Figure 1 (cartoon, rainbow, N blue to C red):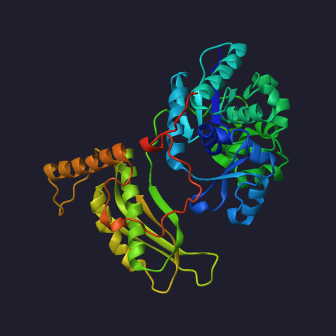
Figure 2 (tube, rainbow, N blue to C red; figure 1 turned 45 degrees about the vertical axis):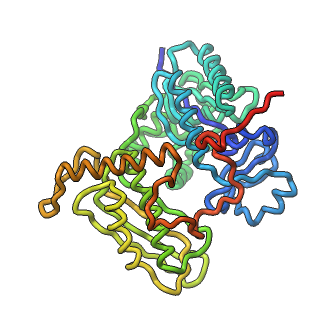
Figure 3 (cartoon, helix red, strand yellow; figure 1 turned 90 degrees about the horizontal axis):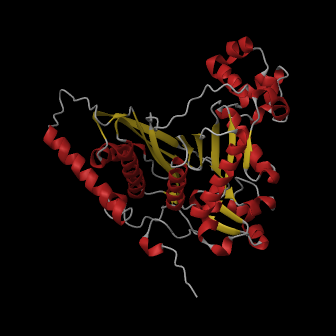
Length: 425
């Protein structure tokens, strides 16, 4: 029996998480906003039916949404991250292999079942996730990842499929792939789509049947793999472990412009602390740190700049990274400008157990162990009692530039004080 892959994803994930914990939102249109309540980044099914566009600036449609009875929520990343972990744990217990692809979708190898039994398995999985987490999922199954992605979309568009679709054998793919424009294939960007269109390859089926030598000559092995995937030949393996990151970035737009050096230092320090926490979770060290700042690109007199420092010893110690980053802020700051965004980029990442010592910078094993123990303690306390329980004073206590989230829902699953209460009558 040929191996079958599935793409499983949550429908309208951010909005669905909000609806799962608030019964008053069931059946109502819900939109979720981006950082600083800027743009619409998620919509419930009901909001989509009203024609509310993705990426629309909130200030332009605030009154319209109110008139339509649309519920507005700020991005609740703690809730979405925790619900994502629960979804993946639920899926991982019921498939032989699982690759977490994003916060709301995963590729999986299905159990070894017949075609009819696979559809029943997909339907049972949907019921299970709905019962345990209150979220709806779609399941698309096919011999390859690219086809599984297309199957997932087909599972959503036709209500008769009830959120589950499996591609037939490779010999019967033509009518399905003929209906898919080449631009909508997973992995096809603007350049490849334009190249295909100029050669009359307007559908997924046309690209799958193109001359392989032509595809390889223009797009190399990547293009050839894509074509083979469309033919039902699996070329992209499941990646079960997280791929080591090459760089880590933390950046945010401010809720209000910053004109003061002290506040800019606080913002950059906050991002350094978060970036260091990410490094430790990834079990990595950094040997290169970049700080960047900019004003609004939509106002006259734009100013943007960055500065980089190489670290003599790779580290994930927050204190060391702060000492390296803060002098760069003073170097970049220009009085008279209104800064709208800043960020920190960590590069030249390496595994935790491969620290390369420096001839002129001594760091004994005992010193290294003390640093690691301190950072571990800080992470444990913040993880147990909530982010910010222990923090560096340089980040400020209640900075006015902090991200604006005026429609934030409770952290239903990550804070004891905000756990939902159920009253039985």
